[in-house]
Length: 145
Image 1 (cartoon, rainbow, N blue to C red):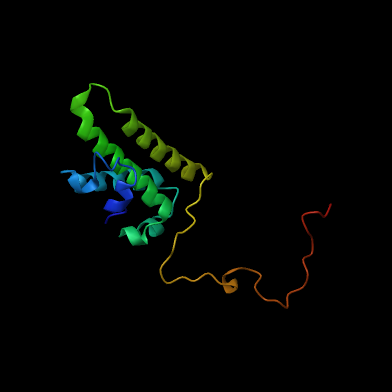
Image 2: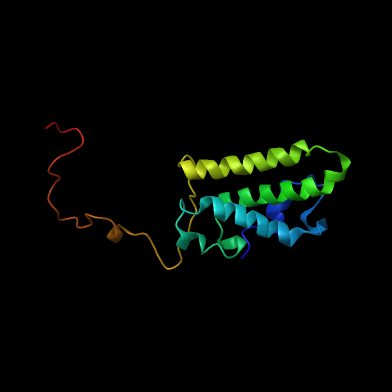
């Protein structure tokens, strides 16, 4: 299962310095990012929905963006870790952005809007009352008791 592809990662890497393809630890990085994303969202996003994220094409855009940032941060950090004892600022910024987006999903401030559930098409039949011949509502939000 992979939630990101190389293009999702390369969006966040400086093109003149690094690319996802040049990383020797690319697959491990993708697995780490997937674990971080799904681990943080467990209990907040239905596991049956997350189970459908088997390929990047099946994964919602916001999740791919988070995974891309995490992978790019890990690749950038590993590539430049020997240049300094401190973590590179850009890698930390990408990581912080990814974690902020995850936290916004958890708190409900950000929705996973392009989640697709295979085999389920949302129609008016799924919502109650769905019979156009039903009586008018007995009360409304503006009614006083």
